[in-house]
Length: 314
Ligand code: CP
Image (cartoon, rainbow, N blue to C red; front, side, top):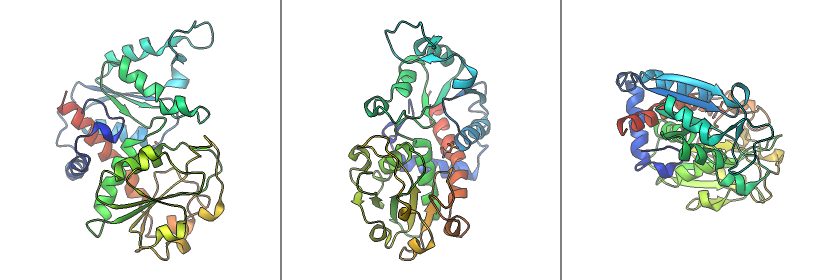
């Protein structure tokens, strides 16, 4: 694996899940692998889980870590080529990425979409600029359109909790008060369609994810019908892809215990952070249905499997 920016960078996604599960059993076994190696973590946006789990994963592998909140701590970076830099940006991505790539063996980058310019967002300008100019492996810590470290953790969690070989997994849209990226939904769909699980995406009319990522999934618009018999219910809001960035507040899509009545005693997942009683009700989050905490715990083994794979192939 050279870079890790989507499932397409992974030769054997389910093999990587098994690798992460093995790492979880013995997390310090490869402590010497990362000795004298540095992981740089660059955040253009806020984070709790990605930041801490990536640091923990690197420490488990013996790596040093440099963390930078780019928009607060660094010079403002210019992303456009060929511009006269006589405005607010003081340093171009061509120099910034190349310099940081000399300080670090691996760079992780988090950069959210604008949600105003779909073409620019879906061209993944920032993560691709790092891939082009940094000269070292790039790990997505959530890009404009995908969150592969989250999706790998999600598949690890399903592997741990599933009671049948091929569970029914439903990704359901949920309401929110703000316009959120499509990245978690896109990425979960992209990874799940690589499995032989029974996979459904249920989304309101006008809030369909791009078919580029959901191709191969069953697509539905009736949430109650989709949830019937589900073993796993993955809950996530995203703003509209087609009416780009439009927020959806349909409150009747909130997931509560009543919604789970016709599932197969489904386990409920969410990437977190989650707004209680907007997206998922307390009666789910505080019940045995919820596996959001072990799901977040698996972010460490997701990151560690990816870092280990890159270091082993360096
Ligand atoms: N799920 C996730 O990526 O969480 P953070 O935004 O807190 O990193």
